[in-house]
Amino acid sequence: MVNGLKKLSSMEYPGRLIILGKDLFGSYVVVVYAVTGRSPSSQARKIIAKKNGAWVEPYDEMTLKRGNVDLLVYPAIQISKGIAVSNGKHTSAIRDCLAQQKNPVEVLSNALEKWDYEPDAPNYTPRISGCVIKPEKAALGIIKRAPDGSAYKKCYEISLINGKGKMIATYTGDNSNPLPSFEGEPLDVDLYEKSPAETAEAVYKALGPKNHEKDFRVSVAVLFADSREFEKHAIAIINRHERKE
Image (cartoon, rainbow, N blue to C red; front, side, top):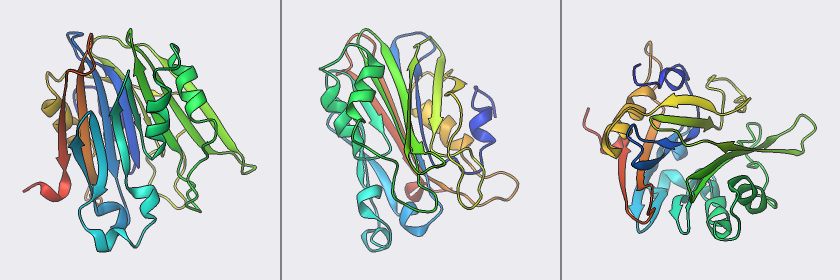
């Protein structure tokens, strides 16, 4: 896989992932949110664009109800005094803190203070999150289960560099049981594509199956927000169930 997504391409099952960065020319803040799923209820979802953001919603209500709807339907990206992104309903908590702090790590730390990892034993899916505030400061965070059952929380300040991004996922990429939580610091990626649509296509292809593996892709959403005015933005979305391939 070209365009700096080789690490993502090597992950058989990353779960959900977030990438924060800037486009090659530095005109846009780039936010990527992608969903993969193994179960029918996880696959029965789509991402839709809404005013100032994107939501994960069902495309198959009956199948979705077999899972935990509270964990499967949520705002993924929200724009308000900054940009909030996460793999759950804690996106709204991050959004509400965007105007209260000037440090992105403090935004995430305060917003996630009362949150825990997901109660989906035996995987205990981590909650991953990110935020971008002006002037172009960003952070990524994770809440995952520690060996003693407590919540391990870590936030990373991210430098926004032209053509570069940082990625965090819920899992390491190994398709095993239980699924191993993401480890270490956010990963480096290159963002060479010139538009949200091109970036979405590159991420979607990187998530595709290799060597006859099962296709776990669900949705990819990419936000390009004007570096000076986040309210000026464009979103491209790919939903697997809508693709004709």
